[in-house]
Length: 311
Image (cartoon, rainbow, N blue to C red):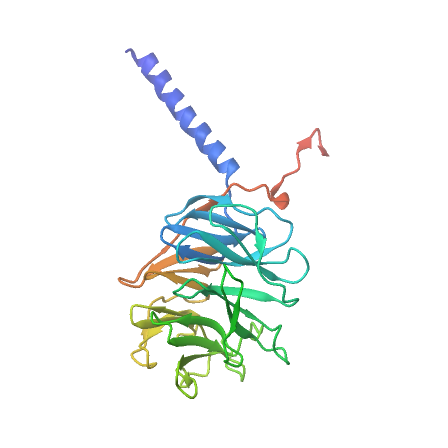
């Protein structure tokens, strides 16, 4: 092959690579990712008011919902078949379920008050928090069987963000609920604490009473309790033993806060800024999950300028 042909082939290949790169960048975009949840290698999160699914290694996400109402707080059942979430389809924010990989949502609650999906118990019941049954605007934890829709009211005042140990005899929960005060490093009277209640005991035990700041989102795994806390100045992931001792810090972010953490088999996914990250607490390997959206978000459309006129 002479030099002219070689140059032609090289420029042709370079042009094809450039064209594919431009096409890929024009059909995908970064998003603002919230409320991640994980089961195995499957990650579900909220963006653009809908729910999306992607591999935990990242990549191009697929949209699961298209309803005009907003979907938030997705959680995946232990068997990996059902996705539960909160949505405002018919007025109040209620609980809905759907097949994990897509399908028609089914309404689960009719509380006429905001209901927030929290997670699943080890035996497959959905846990959620609502103010519908309290005489004052305080949250209450409820479990519901997805098959019978029978409810069990957890008798703990102001409980939210609950997580059982493997025996389901001990519940770790946050109290009170989120105060909707976004003041940085808040240490007021409604700051959340992590509590422990064991069946058969007379009362719950405050595990974080030594710290006046925020403690939230308890997550039980392998003999330790993982949770969010701002002891370091920013919200990060910490852990402690069942008695509230032997504290360890696992993430070390400054400025941006860890939000909406969710745990599965030693891996915690969480929101940081506009991104979703994942830490494996076995080795503290913390990384960003690179996610792209194939989005038709209206605000992303650009006007075309033709002969000086915007159309």
